[in-house]
Length: 153
Image (cartoon, rainbow, N blue to C red; front, side):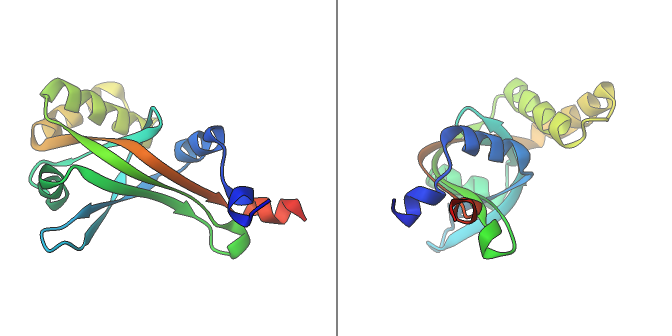
């Protein structure tokens, strides 16, 4: 079996990995043609991820011009610990206030699970009018788990 095949994660492993991680790096194409990288909190959504950001942010400006992005989630410090998922995505910008608010609440519940729901709703409601939702739908996914090499020996 080829090295690449041995380290690829199954769809279930990719889902589990995305559910366990906390930060994505979103790469969009900047106005000068170079990658613009930004870390974001996210929620797993279908086979991709969803997030939100300020509507006037550079990443939103970039996505309005070109709605394609690459999302990276990675971990590990030693070679045999390296794991990750890279997704080339088509990104939908969500501007409907109710949909943005729902997305914001999903993020708030994921990252502050012990917080009071009424407090989260109040905070998200104040932020949502300035935010845009990002729905990242993968067109190509590449994954790796180098621990599988260790386990194969």
